[in-house]
Image (cartoon, rainbow, N blue to C red; front, top):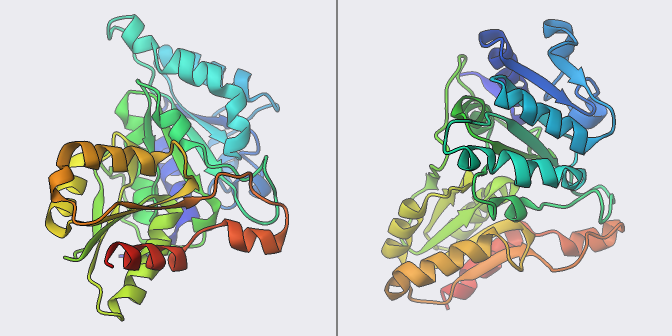
Length: 324
Protein backbone atom coordinates (compact mmCIF):
# COMPACT_ATOMS: atom_id res chain seq x y z
CA UNK A 1 0.00 0.00 0.00
CA UNK A 2 1.22 3.54 -0.74
CA UNK A 3 2.46 5.94 1.88
CA UNK A 4 1.05 9.43 2.25
CA UNK A 5 1.62 12.13 4.80
CA UNK A 6 -1.25 13.03 7.13
CA UNK A 7 -1.74 16.35 5.31
CA UNK A 8 -1.70 14.74 1.84
CA UNK A 9 -4.22 12.15 3.02
CA UNK A 10 -6.57 14.96 4.04
CA UNK A 11 -6.02 16.61 0.67
CA UNK A 12 -6.84 13.38 -1.18
CA UNK A 13 -10.04 12.93 0.82
CA UNK A 14 -11.17 16.44 -0.15
CA UNK A 15 -10.33 15.85 -3.82
CA UNK A 16 -12.14 12.54 -4.04
CA UNK A 17 -15.21 13.88 -2.23
CA UNK A 18 -15.37 16.93 -4.50
CA UNK A 19 -15.01 14.71 -7.58
CA UNK A 20 -17.61 12.17 -6.46
CA UNK A 21 -20.39 14.45 -5.17
CA UNK A 22 -21.43 17.80 -6.69
CA UNK A 23 -23.07 18.73 -3.37
CA UNK A 24 -19.66 18.92 -1.65
CA UNK A 25 -17.90 22.28 -1.49
CA UNK A 26 -15.14 23.76 0.66
CA UNK A 27 -15.29 27.18 2.28
CA UNK A 28 -13.08 28.98 4.78
CA UNK A 29 -10.17 31.29 5.40
CA UNK A 30 -6.94 30.45 3.64
CA UNK A 31 -8.20 27.45 1.68
CA UNK A 32 -5.81 28.42 -1.12
CA UNK A 33 -2.96 29.41 1.17
CA UNK A 34 -0.29 26.89 2.28
CA UNK A 35 0.52 29.11 5.28
CA UNK A 36 -2.95 28.30 6.63
CA UNK A 37 -3.53 24.78 5.32
CA UNK A 38 -0.10 23.34 4.64
CA UNK A 39 -0.43 20.79 1.83
CA UNK A 40 -3.81 19.59 3.10
CA UNK A 41 -5.75 21.66 0.51
CA UNK A 42 -3.01 22.23 -2.05
CA UNK A 43 -4.26 23.29 -5.52
CA UNK A 44 -7.83 22.13 -4.92
CA UNK A 45 -9.06 25.47 -6.29
CA UNK A 46 -7.13 24.85 -9.53
CA UNK A 47 -8.63 21.37 -9.84
CA UNK A 48 -12.25 22.15 -8.90
CA UNK A 49 -12.63 25.89 -9.39
CA UNK A 50 -13.14 28.79 -7.04
CA UNK A 51 -16.91 28.32 -6.91
CA UNK A 52 -16.39 25.02 -5.04
CA UNK A 53 -13.23 25.97 -3.14
CA UNK A 54 -14.26 29.31 -1.66
CA UNK A 55 -11.74 31.52 0.14
CA UNK A 56 -13.95 33.41 2.58
CA UNK A 57 -13.54 36.78 4.28
CA UNK A 58 -12.28 36.87 7.87
CA UNK A 59 -15.67 36.23 9.42
CA UNK A 60 -15.82 32.85 11.11
CA UNK A 61 -19.40 33.31 12.27
CA UNK A 62 -20.81 34.33 8.89
CA UNK A 63 -18.85 31.70 6.95
CA UNK A 64 -19.94 28.89 9.26
CA UNK A 65 -23.53 30.13 9.30
CA UNK A 66 -23.61 30.23 5.50
CA UNK A 67 -22.31 26.66 5.32
CA UNK A 68 -24.90 25.46 7.82
CA UNK A 69 -27.63 27.12 5.75
CA UNK A 70 -26.31 25.40 2.63
CA UNK A 71 -26.30 22.06 4.47
CA UNK A 72 -29.93 22.48 5.46
CA UNK A 73 -30.84 22.96 1.78
CA UNK A 74 -29.09 19.70 0.83
CA UNK A 75 -25.47 20.63 0.15
CA UNK A 76 -22.50 18.92 1.84
CA UNK A 77 -20.19 21.76 2.88
CA UNK A 78 -16.81 21.47 4.58
CA UNK A 79 -15.91 24.60 6.57
CA UNK A 80 -12.20 25.17 7.13
CA UNK A 81 -11.00 26.96 10.27
CA UNK A 82 -7.18 27.21 10.12
CA UNK A 83 -6.99 27.84 13.86
CA UNK A 84 -9.40 26.28 16.30
CA UNK A 85 -9.05 29.27 18.61
CA UNK A 86 -10.87 31.59 16.21
CA UNK A 87 -13.56 29.03 15.47
CA UNK A 88 -14.93 30.12 18.84
CA UNK A 89 -16.32 33.14 16.98
CA UNK A 90 -18.58 30.61 15.23
CA UNK A 91 -19.74 28.92 18.44
CA UNK A 92 -23.25 30.32 18.01
CA UNK A 93 -24.05 28.78 14.60
CA UNK A 94 -22.30 25.53 15.55
CA UNK A 95 -23.82 25.02 19.01
CA UNK A 96 -27.13 26.84 18.74
CA UNK A 97 -28.00 26.10 15.12
CA UNK A 98 -26.22 23.09 13.58
CA UNK A 99 -26.39 20.98 16.73
CA UNK A 100 -30.11 21.61 17.32
CA UNK A 101 -31.87 21.85 13.96
CA UNK A 102 -32.60 18.14 13.54
CA UNK A 103 -33.96 17.88 17.08
CA UNK A 104 -36.08 21.02 16.78
CA UNK A 105 -37.71 19.73 13.60
CA UNK A 106 -38.21 16.16 14.84
CA UNK A 107 -35.66 14.69 12.44
CA UNK A 108 -37.29 16.15 9.33
CA UNK A 109 -34.26 18.39 8.74
CA UNK A 110 -30.64 17.27 8.79
CA UNK A 111 -27.51 19.40 8.84
CA UNK A 112 -24.79 17.50 6.93
CA UNK A 113 -21.99 19.99 7.56
CA UNK A 114 -18.37 19.17 8.39
CA UNK A 115 -16.52 21.78 10.41
CA UNK A 116 -12.80 21.25 10.12
CA UNK A 117 -10.83 22.82 12.95
CA UNK A 118 -7.03 22.84 12.99
CA UNK A 119 -5.06 22.77 16.24
CA UNK A 120 -2.00 24.89 15.49
CA UNK A 121 -0.06 24.63 18.73
CA UNK A 122 3.60 25.36 19.40
CA UNK A 123 6.03 27.63 17.62
CA UNK A 124 5.80 30.30 20.34
CA UNK A 125 2.34 31.30 19.11
CA UNK A 126 0.95 31.85 22.58
CA UNK A 127 -2.41 31.69 24.25
CA UNK A 128 -4.66 32.78 21.37
CA UNK A 129 -3.18 30.58 18.63
CA UNK A 130 -2.52 27.25 20.37
CA UNK A 131 -5.73 26.12 22.02
CA UNK A 132 -7.25 22.64 21.83
CA UNK A 133 -10.87 23.11 22.90
CA UNK A 134 -12.37 19.86 21.62
CA UNK A 135 -14.02 19.12 24.97
CA UNK A 136 -16.14 22.26 24.61
CA UNK A 137 -17.78 20.92 21.46
CA UNK A 138 -17.93 17.31 22.62
CA UNK A 139 -20.11 18.59 25.48
CA UNK A 140 -22.88 19.60 23.07
CA UNK A 141 -25.67 17.14 22.13
CA UNK A 142 -26.17 16.92 18.37
CA UNK A 143 -22.50 17.29 17.45
CA UNK A 144 -20.10 14.51 16.57
CA UNK A 145 -16.37 15.11 17.10
CA UNK A 146 -13.51 13.17 15.52
CA UNK A 147 -9.74 13.51 15.96
CA UNK A 148 -7.69 11.32 13.59
CA UNK A 149 -4.12 10.47 14.54
CA UNK A 150 -2.89 8.62 11.43
CA UNK A 151 -2.93 9.35 7.68
CA UNK A 152 -5.27 6.37 7.14
CA UNK A 153 -7.78 7.72 9.64
CA UNK A 154 -7.33 11.33 8.53
CA UNK A 155 -8.68 10.38 5.12
CA UNK A 156 -11.26 7.82 6.23
CA UNK A 157 -12.77 9.93 9.01
CA UNK A 158 -13.14 12.98 6.76
CA UNK A 159 -15.00 10.89 4.20
CA UNK A 160 -17.17 9.38 6.94
CA UNK A 161 -17.89 12.85 8.34
CA UNK A 162 -19.05 14.23 4.98
CA UNK A 163 -21.22 11.21 4.33
CA UNK A 164 -22.64 11.03 7.86
CA UNK A 165 -25.56 13.41 7.39
CA UNK A 166 -25.10 15.13 10.76
CA UNK A 167 -22.89 18.03 11.90
CA UNK A 168 -19.40 16.68 12.54
CA UNK A 169 -16.39 18.51 13.93
CA UNK A 170 -13.24 17.17 12.28
CA UNK A 171 -10.21 18.23 14.31
CA UNK A 172 -6.69 17.79 12.97
CA UNK A 173 -3.36 18.78 14.52
CA UNK A 174 -0.61 20.53 12.57
CA UNK A 175 2.00 18.55 14.53
CA UNK A 176 0.82 15.45 12.66
CA UNK A 177 0.97 16.86 9.12
CA UNK A 178 4.28 15.27 8.12
CA UNK A 179 3.58 11.84 9.67
CA UNK A 180 3.52 9.15 6.97
CA UNK A 181 1.43 6.00 6.82
CA UNK A 182 -0.44 3.57 4.61
CA UNK A 183 -3.47 5.08 2.86
CA UNK A 184 -5.79 3.17 0.46
CA UNK A 185 -6.39 4.66 -2.99
CA UNK A 186 -10.15 5.03 -3.19
CA UNK A 187 -12.98 6.37 -1.07
CA UNK A 188 -13.34 4.54 2.24
CA UNK A 189 -14.80 5.33 5.64
CA UNK A 190 -13.45 4.92 9.15
CA UNK A 191 -16.54 4.47 11.36
CA UNK A 192 -17.27 7.42 13.63
CA UNK A 193 -17.34 6.29 17.25
CA UNK A 194 -14.97 3.36 16.73
CA UNK A 195 -11.57 3.35 18.44
CA UNK A 196 -8.56 1.31 17.31
CA UNK A 197 -6.25 -0.93 19.31
CA UNK A 198 -2.78 0.05 18.10
CA UNK A 199 -1.04 -2.46 20.35
CA UNK A 200 -2.41 -5.25 22.55
CA UNK A 201 -1.13 -5.58 26.09
CA UNK A 202 -1.98 -6.91 29.53
CA UNK A 203 -0.50 -4.54 32.13
CA UNK A 204 -2.03 -1.10 31.47
CA UNK A 205 -4.63 0.41 29.14
CA UNK A 206 -3.42 3.63 27.51
CA UNK A 207 -6.12 5.68 25.75
CA UNK A 208 -4.88 8.58 23.62
CA UNK A 209 -6.27 11.17 21.22
CA UNK A 210 -4.88 12.85 18.11
CA UNK A 211 -1.26 13.99 18.48
CA UNK A 212 -0.99 12.22 21.83
CA UNK A 213 -1.75 8.90 20.13
CA UNK A 214 1.47 9.38 18.17
CA UNK A 215 3.34 10.26 21.36
CA UNK A 216 1.73 7.29 23.10
CA UNK A 217 3.10 4.95 20.43
CA UNK A 218 6.62 6.18 21.25
CA UNK A 219 5.94 5.76 24.96
CA UNK A 220 4.71 2.19 24.47
CA UNK A 221 8.00 1.24 22.79
CA UNK A 222 10.00 2.80 25.60
CA UNK A 223 7.90 0.96 28.19
CA UNK A 224 8.22 -2.35 26.33
CA UNK A 225 12.00 -2.11 26.74
CA UNK A 226 11.38 -1.92 30.50
CA UNK A 227 9.18 -5.02 30.45
CA UNK A 228 5.85 -3.17 30.70
CA UNK A 229 3.14 -4.49 28.37
CA UNK A 230 0.78 -1.64 27.40
CA UNK A 231 -2.47 -1.88 25.45
CA UNK A 232 -2.68 1.27 23.33
CA UNK A 233 -6.07 2.54 22.18
CA UNK A 234 -6.28 5.39 19.66
CA UNK A 235 -9.68 6.88 20.47
CA UNK A 236 -10.17 8.49 17.01
CA UNK A 237 -13.67 9.76 17.90
CA UNK A 238 -14.31 11.68 21.10
CA UNK A 239 -18.07 12.15 20.59
CA UNK A 240 -19.27 9.45 20.56
CA UNK A 241 -16.30 7.58 22.01
CA UNK A 242 -15.86 3.83 22.02
CA UNK A 243 -16.92 2.97 25.57
CA UNK A 244 -17.20 -0.75 24.93
CA UNK A 245 -13.63 -1.08 23.69
CA UNK A 246 -12.21 1.01 26.53
CA UNK A 247 -14.23 -0.83 29.17
CA UNK A 248 -13.21 -4.20 27.75
CA UNK A 249 -9.53 -3.24 27.80
CA UNK A 250 -9.64 -1.84 31.33
CA UNK A 251 -11.47 -4.96 32.43
CA UNK A 252 -8.49 -6.96 31.19
CA UNK A 253 -5.64 -4.77 32.48
CA UNK A 254 -7.18 -3.16 35.56
CA UNK A 255 -5.24 0.06 35.01
CA UNK A 256 -5.92 3.13 32.87
CA UNK A 257 -3.88 6.10 31.65
CA UNK A 258 -5.52 8.72 29.40
CA UNK A 259 -3.46 11.09 27.25
CA UNK A 260 -5.14 14.14 25.70
CA UNK A 261 -3.17 17.24 24.74
CA UNK A 262 -5.73 19.68 26.12
CA UNK A 263 -6.26 21.22 29.54
CA UNK A 264 -6.70 18.87 32.48
CA UNK A 265 -9.88 20.33 34.00
CA UNK A 266 -13.17 19.33 32.40
CA UNK A 267 -11.58 17.65 29.42
CA UNK A 268 -12.02 14.44 27.43
CA UNK A 269 -9.68 12.63 29.81
CA UNK A 270 -11.89 13.61 32.74
CA UNK A 271 -14.99 12.36 30.92
CA UNK A 272 -13.42 8.98 30.18
CA UNK A 273 -12.08 8.63 33.71
CA UNK A 274 -15.47 9.46 35.25
CA UNK A 275 -17.24 7.00 32.95
CA UNK A 276 -14.84 4.17 33.78
CA UNK A 277 -15.15 4.81 37.51
CA UNK A 278 -18.93 4.97 37.25
CA UNK A 279 -19.35 1.85 35.13
CA UNK A 280 -16.51 -0.57 35.92
CA UNK A 281 -14.96 0.68 39.15
CA UNK A 282 -14.68 -2.93 40.34
CA UNK A 283 -12.17 -3.66 37.56
CA UNK A 284 -9.65 -1.01 38.63
CA UNK A 285 -6.50 -2.08 40.47
CA UNK A 286 -5.06 1.45 40.72
CA UNK A 287 -6.16 5.09 40.43
CA UNK A 288 -6.62 6.41 36.89
CA UNK A 289 -3.89 8.74 35.58
CA UNK A 290 -4.37 11.60 33.12
CA UNK A 291 -1.66 13.13 30.94
CA UNK A 292 -2.92 16.56 29.87
CA UNK A 293 -1.79 20.15 29.59
CA UNK A 294 -1.56 22.19 32.77
CA UNK A 295 -4.48 24.50 33.47
CA UNK A 296 -2.69 27.55 32.10
CA UNK A 297 -2.61 29.44 28.79
CA UNK A 298 0.04 28.40 26.28
CA UNK A 299 3.26 30.39 26.76
CA UNK A 300 5.03 32.40 24.07
CA UNK A 301 8.51 31.38 25.21
CA UNK A 302 10.26 28.41 23.59
CA UNK A 303 11.77 27.39 26.92
CA UNK A 304 8.40 27.53 28.67
CA UNK A 305 6.79 25.56 25.83
CA UNK A 306 9.14 22.68 26.58
CA UNK A 307 7.73 22.52 30.09
CA UNK A 308 4.13 23.19 29.06
CA UNK A 309 3.54 20.61 26.34
CA UNK A 310 3.28 16.94 27.21
CA UNK A 311 4.52 13.94 25.25
CA UNK A 312 6.00 10.47 25.42
CA UNK A 313 8.10 11.07 28.54
CA UNK A 314 5.14 12.23 30.60
CA UNK A 315 3.13 9.22 29.40
CA UNK A 316 5.91 6.85 30.46
CA UNK A 317 5.98 8.46 33.90
CA UNK A 318 2.19 8.14 34.29
CA UNK A 319 2.16 4.48 33.24
CA UNK A 320 4.95 3.59 35.65
CA UNK A 321 3.13 5.44 38.44
CA UNK A 322 -0.11 3.42 38.07
CA UNK A 323 1.94 0.23 38.25
CA UNK A 324 3.53 1.06 41.61
